[in-house]
Image (tube, each protein chain N blue to C red):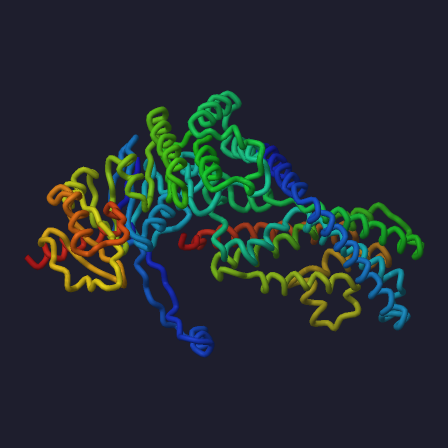
Length: 263
Length: 332
C-alpha cells in the first residue's frame, strides 16, 4: 500500500519533469507518429508487392502487427528507465542517489520514469486491431478477448523482465545497452505470425525469448481457434511470473556489484 | 555510532596497453592490477562528533564514505552503523543516514525544489508535523526558501549545495556524511554552510563525517580529524595536536624580476625553506618562530620582489609532512 502511494508521488514528479521540457515532449510525440507512420507504410508497401505472406492477407498481418504493439507499449509506459540504466547511468556512476534511499532500487527504477509516449502506441495498436478485425470479420468470443488481454498485459511483464535482466548486467559490465538492444529487437519478430519463420526461430520465439508466446499464439487463437484460450492464458501468466521473479532475483544479485565512479 | 574495523577495498583494474593495439590486447589478457583504495582502516566515531576525514586526491576518502553509506561493498573488513552493516542492510541503514556528495546532486534535476522535498517526505515516511517543523528550521538555517520553487537545474552551485544539505536532513538522520560540501564555493557560501552544519549538530546532535580540501572548513568545524593517505590512516586525533606538531606554517610566494637569479641570493636563515620555479620563489617558514614581517622585508630587499602572496599550510602539505616524519621515525 505504501509503495502504491509512493509510486504515484514519484510518477507525478516524473510527469512534472516531462512538462518542464515542452519542446522535448512535442518532439517526442511527433517522432513517435512519424516513425510509426513509416513502419506502417513500409509494411503496406511490402504487402502490396507480395500480396500474401505465406498465405496471410494484409488484414491478417495488420492484425498481428497492431496487437504486437500493445505489450510493447505497456512495457514502454512503465519501464523506460531501464534503458538508461543499461546505457548510461551505471557507467556514469549516476545511481548513487537510489542506493541511498530506504526503498528497493528496482522499485525506484519503475518509479523514476513514466513514459506517456506509450499511450500513443496503445491507441495506434487498438485502432489497427479494430480496423483489421472488421475487415477480417472476426467472430468475437469471450475466451479470445480474454487471451488477448492476458497476452498484452502479461506479455508486457515478460518484456519488462528481459529488460530488467539485461540492464542488471550493467552493474557487472558497466554498460549493457547494446546487449539489451539485441534482445529487445527480438520483439520485432513478434510482429509477424510465427508460422512464417523456420522451425528453429519458432522454437526460440516460444521457449527462449517467448515473444511469440504472447503475440502470435493468442492472435492465432482469436483468428483461427488454434489453441484453447484458457490454457494458453495460463501458460502466458506462468511464464510471466517465473520470468519476473527470475529478473528481480538477478537484479538484486547484480546490484551488489555496483561501483560508483571515483568522485 | 560508527565502527570501522580493518576495512579494505581492492579494485581490480585490467593492465592496459598503450594505443589501440594495446587496448585490443587488454581485451584478451587476464592480467589485473590490484589497487588497494582503502587498506585496513579502523576507527570509531561517537555520537554527536564532527569528524574531518581528510587526505589528498585519490587517498581513499570517497571510497570509505561510500562503504559507510552502503553504496560500495568492502572487499574485507566491516563497517557498523549503529550496529548494522550498511551494504547488507541497505534499506534500514538508509533511514538513519543523510548523505551529500559535493559533486553530484541527490535531487531530481528538473522539478522545483519543493517537489523534490515532497517526494523525499514520502520516501522517508516523514510525518506532516515533523516535515513542517524541520522545513522551518532548515529554511532559516540554510536560507532555501528564496529558491524553493525553482527547478534544481537552475540553482547556482551554492544554492544547490544548501538544497542538498536540507534534503539530506529532512528525515532527521543520526549520521550525516558530507563529501566535499564546500567544493567550488565562494567564501560567503562556505561560511553559511559551516554555520548550518554547526546548527544541525547542536540542535539534533547529529554525528557528522565530512571530507574536505579546505583547511578553514576543518579548523572551523572539526574537533577531530582522521587523515588518510594511499588507503591507510596516517593520523587520527584532535586537530589541535596536529597543528601543534607542524606549527603555524606559511608560504610566501614572490615573483622575482628577470635579472635576479634566485639561486644566487643569500638564504635568510635555516628556518626559511626556499624553493624556486621559473620566476616564482617560495619561502616556507613557521610563523611562530620567524616573524612574517621579517620574511616579507627580506623578500623585497634581497629578491626585489615585484609581487607576493601568502598562503597557509594546505592539507597536501600536512600529509607530506606527516609522511616525512613517519619515514624519519622509522629510520631513527
